[in-house]
Amino acid sequence: MEKIIFNIGNIPVRLEILALAAFVLLALLLIIILYAQLSSNKNRQVELLKSKKQNDELERHMASVLQVQSEMTGRMQTMSEIFGTRTSDLAKTLVDKIETTNQRMGHNLSENRIKTEQSLSKLNERLAVIDKAQSTITDLSSEIVSLQSILSNKQTRGAFGQGRMEVIIADGLAPSGYTFQATLSNASRPDCLIHMPNDAPDLVIDAKFPLEAWQRMNEGENAQDLKQARTAFKNDISVHVKAIASKYLIAGETQDTAFMFVPSESIFADLHEHFEDVIQKANRARVVIVSPSLLMLSIQVVQALLRDVKMREQAHLIQKEVRLLMDDIGRLDERVEKLQTHFNSASKDIDLIVTSSKKITRRSGNIEAMEFENDKVKIEG
Image (tube, rainbow, N blue to C red):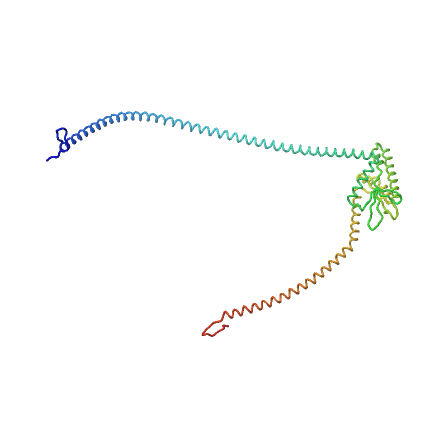
């Protein structure tokens, strides 16, 4: 009996009919799909043909474009090579010309710099010489003006000589070694007294050198004026030497020689060169004419004498200190001997201790070397 699946109205639907209907529907569906596929393939082939034609045309156009491009590229490459070659040649030419120009300019600049430096150096040297000469001239003019102002006034001349003399003495001696404007027993007042050591008489120094005649001698306009000025200069020095010898050379109170100070080395040299007889006359009167350098040397000699006297005065103190030092050395020697005795005793004790230590060490070794066999003690060695 065939199985009924369902009823459509009064018509029963069996399984065979249902299967047949499904098969028919499936066949129709496949036919429809196949037709659609064929139509689609036909359209696709048409489109592919159109696309192929378009692609062929595009390829022909691209081939022509590429050919034109390759030709342009070749031409451009040729032009670039030509341009590069010419550019490199031009650059090399320019570089060579620039280097040549730079070398010439550098050489010219170097030569110009050297010449300029040499010129500036010479100019600086000349300017330095001119500045130095101008400075020297200015200094000399100021010194000449100041010296002229000093020499024109008698009091100023005396103060100038006195000042130079005081500076030299104050720099070389202690304040206790000299006295300015001291009064002697005959009421005379020399410019300076140098106190000699060992209660020796004082040394007199006079700074009132007569410069009026020397100034007139330099101002002489003719031989007659010069001769008169020289004669007056000799007379003034002779008078001043006599005044020093008569007023300042006092037996037992001052030295038998006095110094007449000349405040200028040039005047002192002029005296020794042109007025040797005046120098000899002053020496015979025990009046020594000294310049600033000679006075400084004399002060240094006096300073050395004073130092020697002070050393001798302190000799007994030095001897006392030496004796005390020898006593201290003797005590130190005794204490060193005692300390050496203690060291020797301690050294002997240390030797005995070392000996005992060695004996103890040896006995300890013997104890360690003992062997116990059969309850008997055997000592090796």
